[in-house]
View 1: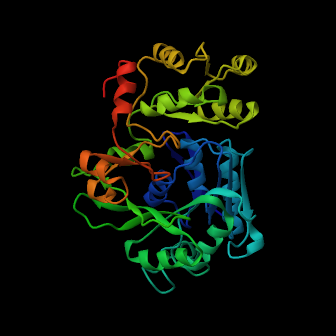
View 2: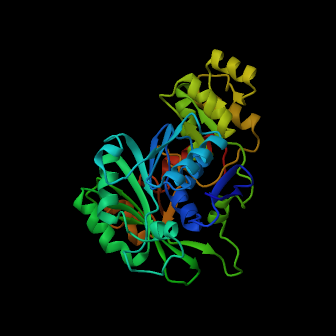
View 3: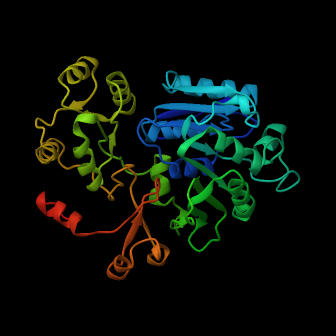
Length: 391
């Protein structure tokens, strides 16, 4: 297979792609941006191709293990090459096999399953110029039912399945997911520009009885044709993200404080020291810990680390704010998932929050990972006042 290298995320990744086969596009990028990974989670990509989804998720998050399944042996080998050359050889594997076969993957082994599936049924959509592109665009080998069954088999209890598809395919995908006991939990439409009709749907499915929460539409480009800030950040074209932190079990409350401030603070409560050390080195995050032997290993290995110098979370936060002034704060993040919350229309939360809360609040936000709804209450105001932080 002839390939070409594609530098991505300002050179943080180099993705080898088929010269004449299917090459990833913006849909893969926005699906990866929609699919949030919690620290240490096991992630599976159904039909991994060149491995782009897993490469992006590893660049943005702190996954524990990555697995891609691919039926095309040449693409499977290409994904292995991409994982190895991008420093994921120790945590990413490629299974060469058919996702329709039950023995191809272990059951109930993954926290998150992602898939950018073929969009069109056989004979639908525009004809592909090559067999490789036809397999990526048309549901010749696996349609919604087969993909949904594979995701359901692979997911752990309370796991999540994230995928994308054209807007007109919502009904068949919802039916296929419902048939295996998964239901849409989060839904986000994607449009090319302001005022354009949606062309793509991002969907997270899980074992949930509630109707899906609709997040605000994602617009790819503004009126001048430039990528919107959210998309630009995913493409690596936005402003520098600033310092990231990775907190171990000894500073868990500090991690929650940082997330309330909008700081990217991973929290790996059950991680071993070896994993923490390697993940901080790989991701460039500052490892925050009170573990003296681990701090010494960081110094010897050239890994950035920080000892907050106290066991009191309030003192720890003050020490961190002094050492990293200013902190790279942004939108408040979900305390459980570390995902920046997304503001949702007030009417969307009717019936999902207590009636009194709905009547007395005007602004609501949702975690794009777990879907939890939040609103600014007195506890957040007290937290900010305690540390002299402006809203």
